[in-house]
Length: 135
Image (cartoon, rainbow, N blue to C red; front, side):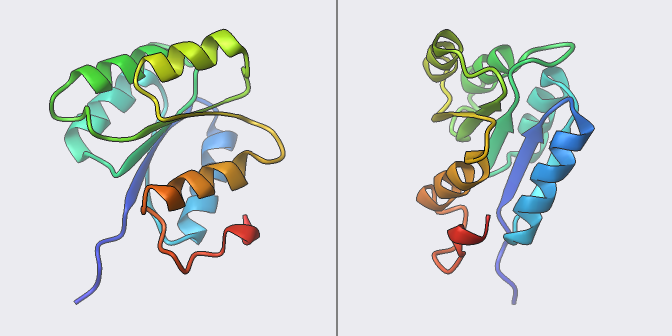
């Protein structure tokens, strides 16, 4: 009998960014779902109920902040942890994201992969054996 692989939903409009994040998470043994915008991400969160969601802020159709609010207002998805991972590291956006229910707001920079993996570890989505230093 095999253990269930934890699933992360990536909601990111940049195919390059989404693919890089997907590869990182799959290398750590996670299953990954991808959505190209907030509207699709909200629908996929309800349909698949992933263990965690990683949201970009600026996307077409529906931005990440609105997607976060909608996911947190839905009784079926409100308990899914959401991390906002964005190039827009402005304090007001961080405040809005955390106020909307995100558990973390991570600026995209040289350390964002390590911080994201540490968050996954803290939520027990990554196993204790996962080497966070190989991000």
